[in-house]
Amino acid sequence: MARMGSRAQAVPRFYSSEPLFGGVAPEVMEAALIRLATENERYLSELPGQAGCCKESRTVEFVFLLAEKWHLDHSARYQAVELLERFMIKQVEQICKSPSENMESTKEGSSRSSLKEQIYATFVLRLVSCIQLASKLSLHYNIVNSDTALKFLQSLKYSYTKQELLESELAVLETLQFQINVSTPLAYIELLLEVLGHNGCLLPAKPLHQMCVQLLDFLYLKREAIYDTLLKTAIENSTPSELQIAKFSAVKEDFMLLAVGIISTSVFVLNPERWKQVVEHLNCVTGITSQSISEFSHAVLKHVVGSSTPKQQRRK
Image (cartoon, rainbow, N blue to C red; front, side, top):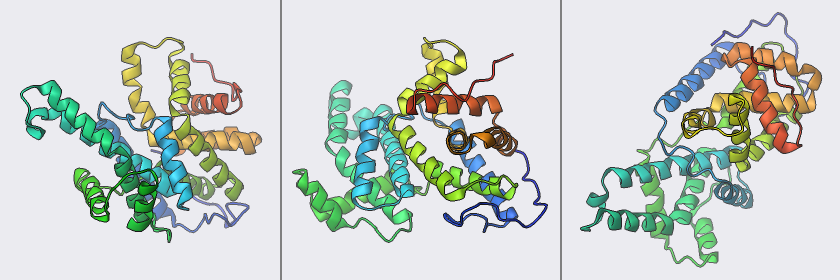
């Protein structure tokens, strides 16, 4: 990872003071960037085979709508999706590892079927629990308490008690071994925006941040379609093999690539004249090639407006 450049002169790094950028010391910024990069690489190196299983559009939309209903910030909604994803992966892994240990059954298939039914039956409850936990992690004043969550579940004709709701939160915590403070793609985006400003890449902070959030929402909701386009672009083939699809799962879970792609696309929409400069900066900071950043922006824009820009650089 390239080091951040030193600032030649004390100039405002963004045109707007909201959201607040520019208040982080360079050494803190660099340490945070290294931590995120390390966390991202570690997760990708240990990527479970079921990664992405709970990020299908209807589930994400459900989480987003609930988060909006309960006035949670964007960080909380992404955190909830990631918590639900990681929790469900652990659930699937438990089924695959020891099906006969969890249910008394003479037939393994019957045992697995029963466990799957249990997961399906409690899915909405677990989803709500993940949103509750995310609301507490976001340090937002709108924490989703038990009364609010219970009222919503009852409106869907579920007859859970407050005790069952608390036990559900505990089940998520224990399954994830209380490791729930995972970084979201938004954390990567905001830190990279801070780094860009520190390195002298002057950008309108507030509209750029807002555009990044809107595009990140869009990508979460259109995830499969966008990454399918990205895969076909990367392999230059409209019919990827099963092996290529399997290997591509790491790309779909790469938060650093996602962050630079969203920033690049946002800059292209708002400040196209600065797009190449920003891509070069992102390349220097993260080590992700300009080619990869360009292809990501192309895939996102294709689904946003049906555009094929930014033009892809031809592979040599």
